[in-house]
Each structure stands twice: as structure tokens, then as C-alpha cells.
Image (cartoon, helix red, strand yellow):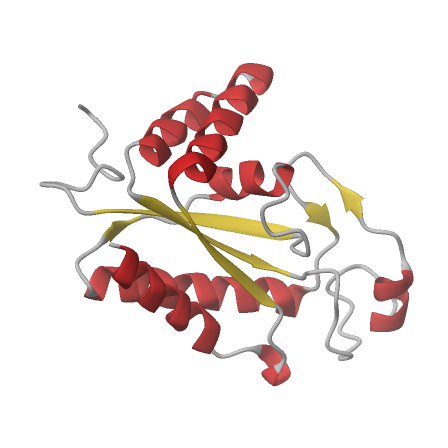
Length: 173
């Protein structure tokens, strides 16, 4: 699993990035750190009364490792597209970013797209290696609150496992 997880990080790292600028951040988490994510997810479930956090926390506990993929979404690429809601990239970068309920924003649209491409490449690679996985935003919420990728403004998590059946899609047992 850990050898496969390293290859998954390679896929995220080498995924195409807007303008060739790499603001993707990655980390493999296991053991105590992985369990801390699950604990934080259970805490968020209780605070917000959202069962999905509790369900996904169980998946994290039952996984061998979690792959974190984040992005420095507070940076721009100087296209001045306005998708962030600012007049130009300079105005976007100079304004103070704020922690919302889950992530820090606003986020540059192109950085968010880069994150999505890196996540897709990572999940595809895990699948090609026959490693069960699922992209989960709730893992990223907990990881951000735990400051596991300190420069990231948005983080997603991909738990990985190799059991008799995927624990991430058939959650009936």
C-alpha cells in the first residue's frame, strides 16, 4: 500500500498545472496522524450534527493510509479572469483570505482546477494499481484544521485500502 501511495503522489505531482506553476501539496498520512484525522472528523460530526463526517471517519480508521492533496489557492496566475470575484489577480492576492467553515478562501479558479486534475490523476493511479480509494472532502476539512499541509488553503483526502471489497463504496457493513 505504501509503495502504491508513493506512486499516487507522483501522479498528483506530475499532473498538468496551469501555466506550469506547481502549487500542489501532498502528504501520505498513516498511524497516529491518520487516526488524528479520524478523531477530528468525529469531533466535527458531533459539532455540526453531520453523519457523513462520522461515516467517513470510520473509513479513515479502517484504511491503511490517507493521501492528502492540497493547493495554495491564495496564489494566482496573473490571468485577471475575475472568476474569484476580484477585478484582477493583484487585488485577489492582496486581499486577506478568510477561513470559512471548511477551507480558506477565496480560491483562484485555476488553482482549484489544478487541484481537481491532481486528484483525478491520483485516484486513477491508485485504481490502476488495484488500490481501493475515494476522494473525500471531509478528510481535507479535518486535515486543514489540524494544519497538516500548512500552506494549503484547500485540502482533499484519498484514503487507500486493499481488502476483500472496497470499504469506500459498499458501506452497508
